Image (cartoon, rainbow, N blue to C red; front, top):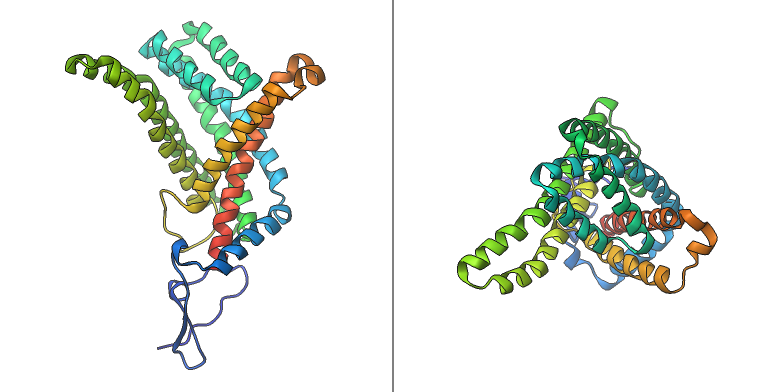
Amino acid sequence: MTPTTKPEPGQPRTATEDCATTGPSGQVTERVPDRPSQLGGESWKGVLRGVVKEFTKDELTDRAAALTYYGVLAIFPALLALVSLLGIAGESATQEVLDNLRKLTPGPARDVITDAVEQLRGNSGLGSVAALVGLVLAVWSASGYIGAFIRASNAVYDMPEGRPVWKVLPLRFGLTIALMLLLVASALIVVFTGGLARQAGDFLGIGATTMTVWSIAKWPVLVLLVTAMIALLYWAAPNTKGRGFQWISPGSFLALVLWMIASAGFAFYVANFGSYNKTYGTVAGVIVFLVWLWITNLAILLGLEFDAEMSRQR
């Protein structure tokens, strides 16, 4: 057996090094865990310590703010495209999405999103032209978000961006389109599966029961789609090699849980203790919306940091 050499700092490990470490004579001296379940207690402590340490070092709060900026630039063109496309399916389709957006966004932030959708819905005469323009703007703006996330993920993994621009640009736009398709799939699930469930329930004579089951079952499906979007970001964005795609990584699961808890906590705070209306007046809803987006991006970056620390411990 040929002895393996230790890689230089910042260089990815080979598959052999991911499996075992070797002594001077080449014999295997220690098995390196290749799954999270194989990490010991000390390794998990190291992961948590590393996340806390790297949180400040990698400036995650600032990077979340940058992602929030690019997110705002991408959201409204995306809403324009979504509302225009749903308008083809009828008024009820847009209303269905609007009702679900109200459930997902906290407090005054809800008003910012719903008001924007209502205004876009009022311009129904724009039709397919608006859909096309909105789609182009959404892809371009969202690619800026993806570019910022690529830079943040490389910082989290302590890796330089060594990929040439002719590789990074297709990655940015390809990843943007893939994530937008998953968003469209989420919207389609919300809009069309309700009608299908109602028809199936009426056919079987259990209409009310079917709608109750559907109203509950759609959320786990949407959660899986969101988790897949996060996992795709975690897999494609950083300039690291040898990492296979995982539908649900520990970091993506942590990000989703943190996001749900933080969103619920922030909504409760705004509803009961916040004084945004007194401080910011008429723009309070916008401020709350921006803070909520910042919390969302911070949760995603924390999940990425968790996965990065796990890879270092392994």
